[in-house]
Image (tube, rainbow, N blue to C red; front, top):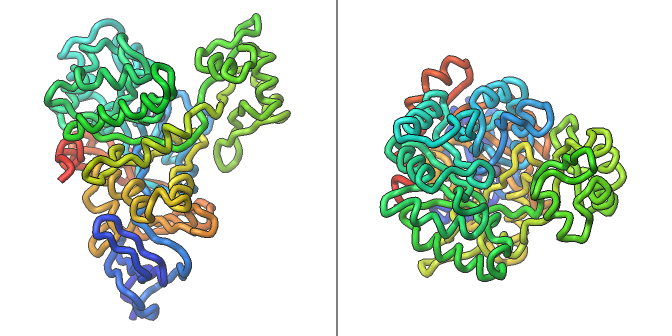
Length: 477
Ligand SMILES: [Zn+2]
């Protein structure tokens, strides 16, 4: 008689919490890991996967994606959901989206992946214009939680608030045990090292915060890049009991190519990217950069959004009358590498997690890039698991995820070391991705007590998070 629902056989099983790294079988029943042991009898399982020569880790948790943007890249609702599943993620956190868009996205293109979402703060949309009083700020955070979001995202690099408002938003979210993530920058600073330098003042002695994509603030715009990295790491270390953080390993940024009637590029970011390689910040400059393979345009395909360069990129840019998402390889690999691998004197990673800042943005490459660090010798396999699963689980207070041991959720990511990327993803015991092909549907929304009513009304499956368990509140333990 069958006992297990699914048996994964002969895999190299990796668990960062127990430091387990050995060939073993993993048996799953009712969405939970029931047994981890060598040579479990396959006759006792309804289904089995031979994972010889494959690595199995607790499911990858990506703490920074965009799958619920109101101004979606492209027209496809939920386009990012199959893209994160294809990359091997089993749980993702949308860093600044709308719950309505997420619900519509899961209905249209859910891939079986768990999703938590932070409400974005944009004056005129989710936040009233003008100065924000503490009462208004309390209402803003409450509205996000009531909608089912697990907290808020401050988009300082795009919609900065004053230092006082920023500080108040963080303190209010903290008081309400809401998650709070910050793309640095206020009206006094930018999305640069000066924005990082401002954080201790914003937090005071008690504030708690998730700092998004630390590498994006170390591009060498204020100091030589190595000095910026060193200073950012020191600030994170000094704030160790108050902040959690992630960095990504993709060189590509994302921006808009739109030009005015005279053929001049509108976005500052695009101008800077073009000037960096001596292209004119114009319509012609963009066409030349596309033709040379420096710039890419984002194209919608059946399986998601992809980057396209060369003549085809020029065609897309012209056809869209310049109003198209574009990408340039401008993120420094030096800051990506150093911030990802840096450790403190206790040999702990200074930056807690690798996240993709992907989702609908086609750069869901954290697993493949982290695997390169293993090949390079900068990471042990268990470091990869800590950065991609255990630490992210701790950051979000997901107490039964991020651990591949008996009694925990059967969320697993299988890595094919031959290709250096995810080969299977399993969520709650169900396969959602096989050999890059996404077969999962639907999804589960991570929400809090306060959002339960709203999410239950959508009919989408959900799970309640206790954010007092999240690392920023519970500590590192
Ligand atoms: Zn982002």
